[in-house]
Length: 186
Image (cartoon, rainbow, N blue to C red; front, side, top):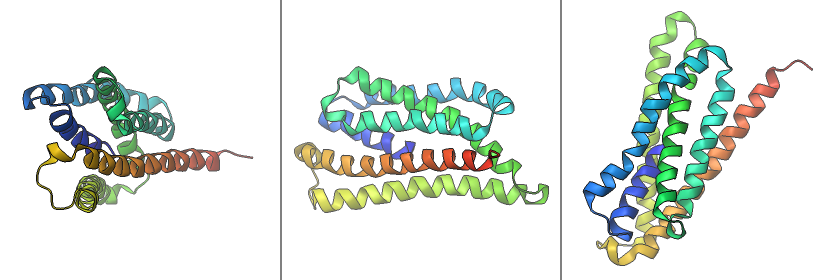
């Protein structure tokens, strides 16, 4: 969920708002910096708390980021920076507990397969989101090569993609909440 949001924001900052690549790169650096800072604490927190709860909180941060980006054409630049920080916090909180949860539910002899599957699924998700966004842009932008002249169409394409991500994020949070409820004794 986080990859496509950064990808869209990159194009929006450069083509719609007219910022140069250096500013855009520094702006987008807020996300990985937040990930680095939060990941350390998330790993320690996942040793003490339920991984699903931490993952649900993390997905909520990511979902807030995506909702902000859904309205990127009507929010000030500092709100977009806040969205990048929220994305980093969410991603940093999500990775350690999610990896721990997945790797603790498999047998010892299947750890390498589970780790491989976890890594592969993340990469496939990034590739699929980029492919899907490219298809959506292809339908809405058509064969136009100049993105700067088709900003409204790009924003429409982005909103369709981000709307799908919002739906998936809400579904994931509900799924985590239901799995936690299922484990509670009646």
